Structures are given as structure tokens and as C-alpha cells.
Image (tube, rainbow, N blue to C red; front, top):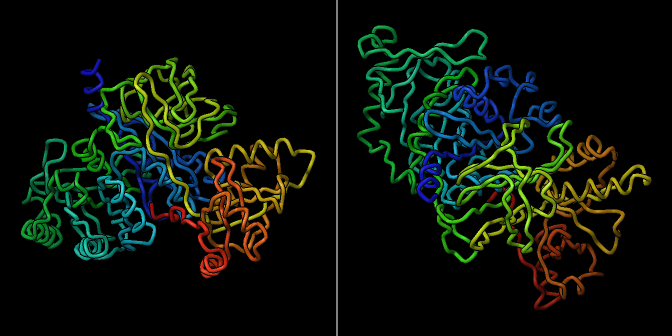
Length: 534
């Protein structure tokens, strides 16, 4: 069995697509699925107006607003590998969801807008990947539009992030006049000696037309553009900007490609590169720092929970990353956090909102457990030798709002909806003695989380509600003694977080922290994980 586990693990490539909003993340997710022949046409190619065809954006609010609100999992076969692709929200307000996804992958594809370069959320995500030691491949997108100079973009990445770009492909033609690329390393065991020329497919929903041109043909067709690209590519070699597998896996370099996801330029090369160089699953450390070898008995952890993904499936799905061993549908597993055993009879694999029953899964795969009541985000499940993986920290909220339902006759539905959204991590649900259980307080990294909360309460639970914004901007953890002391302190509010029993102090500004420390010597006030910082 161990040899089969090793062989199946070696075939897996599990990665996330991450970026600043509007860099083209959902578009490239669709394009990768198209190149993997998992879909017959790309639903994102018409932009936000046609987003109802985007398989990874299944939520109605995502389709209406043209933004990714929640992460999505897609699995498909490509070459001799199983690709597990996780699309993530780009907006900073949903960075906690992105962070959780990054705990479940072995590599990441970072998208940069060729015209904008490094943006604030991009910088934060790079830091998260660095902290988690996740190798990053960079795809410079939208090269079919006016863009910054290619060498300038590389310099910006190295200077601002401290990671050296090693171009795998190099563009022929400036941004907006994209002719094709020079392949600087062999991809899929092959390397074009001249260049790969791109041509849009009619309508843009199918694969782009590519043609390999020999050097003399490229010079004849593209003249100065090709000559300049060839000279710049040779210059990169002289400054040691060539791909190296060890430095990539160590997080010291980021292999870089140029393309245009909307018209499918460079996507095939990206997918081939992922199969060629992205690491396969490896031993993960448990809470004690001991590695759980992939050949060990089954283990996995819940990195996401989602209910009501499909109107015909009014159920809850726990997304489990398989870390070791073989998962078999119907097997009995143990929940590390409570010691409870449970069956896995209803196990599924996901492709956006579409789901199919899965009989077995291997390290690197994502399995959806249906209606696995009692499983929470961050929980570990296992069979055989016990193991518990590190918990997923909650981000520090910066926005607070009191939630009020419009119709008190729907109180039971209201409580069920709030409990569900809290379990999924859509928002943090807090309660205080001052307001009572009838008025929970929502705590969020960004205000868009409030919009999602209200929209889902109305759509999924038929409970219209409103949120009254509160004058707090940050929170600190305290203990039971601190919560008791601060119960009547002015200008702040003490909350209990039912998901873990933690006591949170909500404050209007950082200066109030110092005054509390002066007024209550020895008071415990600890920071939570900063939103988006990992």
C-alpha cells in the first residue's frame, strides 16, 4: 500500500491561484481548466458581464458583482498528473479565506497585472507564501494590453519582495503588441528554438492558436521585436536569472511567465510548467512539529466549510485536504479535536459547484465531506495512528456591526443562519452581555463580509436583516479575568466568541490599548493575526 500511496502522491499537483483584485484570477482559473480539457469553453472570456459561466464563481453575488467572494476547488487530469486547483478571493476583505486555502496547497501561482505590477494585496500574499514556505510561480498577465517594461517588472519584484524572478518565457513585443514568447527552458520536455507565436481563437472561448517559428522565421516575421527579445533573454542569462529547481522550492526565486489569460496566451505553458516543477505532496508537521509521512495512515484537515453551494444541494460541505495515506469513502475516521468517530459515507470531489461521489483519494487531493456535523475549520481527522495538525488562526477584525433581524418570528432560522456563517468563517460571530443573544455582533476583516452575510441570510435562510456599524476598529484577546475587569470600562466592549470561547476586547483605536494597560496593570491584551498578513 505504501508504494501505491507514494506513486499516487507523486502524480498530484495542488496549488492556489492568488492575486490582487482584477488581475484576472478567475479568468486564468477558467483558462487552466480549458487547457486541461476539463471544460469545453471558457466562461470568463467575456469579462464580468458574462460571469455566470465562470465555473469557479458559483455564488450569485459573485456572478452579479463580478468578484470572487469565496474559494473554489477544481480537480482535473492533465498529462499523467491529477491537478487540484484552488481559486481564491482576491479582495483584501476576504483574505482570511485565502489564508486558509494557502494552508492546503503545495505551491501557488501569483498573478500580476502587467500594467500595474505589484499591488498591496499582491505584496501581502507574497509574504504569506514566504511565511508558509510555499513555492511561487509568477504569471505576468494582460500582456496583450499596454504594460510596464518587462525588465522593469522583474526589477520591481526583486527589489520590493526580495525574491528573484527567473523568466521561463520572455515576451516578443511590448505590452499591447504581444507576438509570442521565447521559451528560455524546456517545458514538457520540449523547447522551441526560435519562438512560440500566438494567435487569438475566433470568439476567444477556445484555445489560442500557437505556432513554433524557427529563429530565421521569427526574425523575418517580427524583425526588431524578436531581435530585442532575444537580446534581453540572453542578458537575463548573464545576470543569473535562469531557472533553478532548488532555489524555486526554497522560495528564493520565482519562475516567471508572460501571457494573457483572457485570450489564452501562455496558459498551456503555465500548466505544463506546474506539472514539470511544482512539488508533489510532502510530509506535514503536526502540532508538535513532528512530520506525518505521506505513507502513514489517512489524515487530513478541514480548511473550508461551505453550505448551500447549489440550490439542489441544500447541505454543508467540509473541504478536507488529504495529507497522508489513502482515503476511502465510508471509512471511519476520528476527529482529533473531540475524539469523536464519524463515517465518511457521503464524500465528494468538487469542480466549482459541481460535485461527484469520490471512492478514494490520495495526499494532495481535496475531498468534500457532506453534512459532517461537528467538523469545524481547522479540525484534523485521521485513521490509525493519531495526529493533530496546527489550528488555523483567526484574523484580527477591523469592522464590527450589530446584526438585527427584521422579523422576530424567524428567530430560529436567524440563529441557524448565523451559526452556519460563523462555522464557515464568513464572519466572526461575537456576543456581549450588553446586547444579549438576540443581537449578535459581526466582526470582519473588511465591510464586504457584512454584505455577504446579509445576502446569504436573505437568500439561503429567508431572514432579511440589517447591520448597525459600531465604532470599533481593532480587537485584542484577553482572559476571563480581563473580561470581568473590563466589563464596565468606557469606550470599549467585551465579547465572547462562541466558536472557541475566546474573550475579545473591541477598541476604537490603538491609543485606548495603552490607557487600558495603565488603568489595569497586568491586564492581558494580546493581538490576533493581522488581516492579510498571514
